Length: 494
Image (cartoon, rainbow, N blue to C red; front, side, top):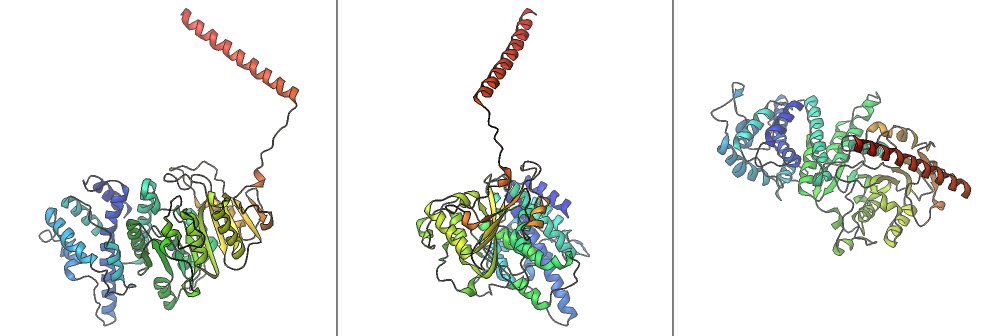
C-alpha cells in the first residue's frame, strides 16, 4: 500500500495542477477517501444482507466508486465505461464534486456521515489538471482494499505519513502537523478514559484526538488486559467523545478526513475560529473532561476578537490559554503546548492570566521541550503545561528534555526521548533533568523552566593570574604569526 502511495505522489508531481506536498496530499486524500467510503458501504451492505435487511447507500449509484472511478466486468476494469482524459475531468469537476458538496445541507443530521462528507468536500476541489493522470491515480488506488480492520489500520498509518510529509515540507503546511512523539507523550500524561469528552480548540489534522482514540481503544491491549469495549461504549467513542474547531479550510478537511479514516465516523469538528467564542457565561455541561492542544502561536488578533476574553491581549497564545482554562470541567485535565515566552513574560496581561492559572488550577507539571521540535516551520522554544481543575497550584514538577543530539528537520524528536520523563513525572522523582518549584518561590508569575542542575560553575581568578593568562595567550599568538610569516616567505622564494 505504501509503495502505491509513493508511486501516486510521483505521478502527481508531474501534473500541471499540483505544486508541492500540500497539493498532492490534498488530492490523494479525496481519492483515497472515496475508495474508503465505497468499501465501507459495501461492507455495511453485506452485513445488512446477512441480517435480512436492506442497506440504504449514502451515495447514489451513479456516484459510487464502482460506477464512475473503476467500473468492472468479470472482476476487471471495464475499459469501455471507465472514463479517462477530458471526459473523466468533466464528470469529476462538473458532476461529482457539486453532488458531494450538496451533502452539507440544513436537512441533514450534523452527526451523520453524509453531513461530514459534505463538510469535507465543501472546501475541496479537484486540482489534477490532466484526466489521464487522474486515471492512473484511480487505477492504483482501486487496487487497495479497505474491507477489513487490518487494511484500515494500514491506511491510517499511511495517511499519517502523508500528513507528516506535508508538515515536513515546511511553510504554511506546518500548521497541520505536531510531531507524534510529543502528542503521544501529552496523551499518556493526561490519560483520557472511555466516557470522557475530549476537546482540541485548534485540531489541525486531528493528531491529538486520534492519539486519544488509540489510547482509549487499545491501551488495555498494550497492557495485555483483555477487556473489549461494549457496543454502548464504542458508540460513545465514535459519536460523543471527540470535539474540536479548526479555522483553516484545508486543515479542517484533513482533520475530518483523518478522523473518518481512523474509524471515527462522526467527529464533532467545526469549521470555525475558536477565538470568536465569548468565554463568559459558559455552563458546566458545555465544558470538557480532557483538553489536548498545540494552538497556533505568534499570531495577533483584532480588538473585536479580544472582546470575547476577560483579559484582553492580541497574542493568540494568551487567548487560547484563557479559552482552555474556561472550557475545562471540574476535575478535568489539560495538556497544552505553549511557547516559552508565555511562561516568562511579566507584562500585565500575561501576569494576570498566569495568576488565575496558578490560583484556580493545579499546574502540576511543566515539560520543557528542546529547541527544534517544530522545525522546519518554527524554531520557537516551547513547553508543555499540564494542569487540572481540582484546586490551586502548590508546587510544579519541571522536566527538561535533553535529546542526545541537536534536533533538525532530518533528526526529529523521538518518543524514546520522553522515556525518563514518563517514568518520573507522576511520582515526581528528581533526576538531573527534573526539579520541583514551590509556588511561593515564583516571582512575578515567571514560571519558565530554569534547570537548577545546570548551573554553570564560574572559576574566579586573581588579577595576577589573569595578567599571566593574557601574556601566555599573546605569546602563543605571536608564535603562530611567526610560523605563518615563515610559510609565506618560503612560498615567495619558490
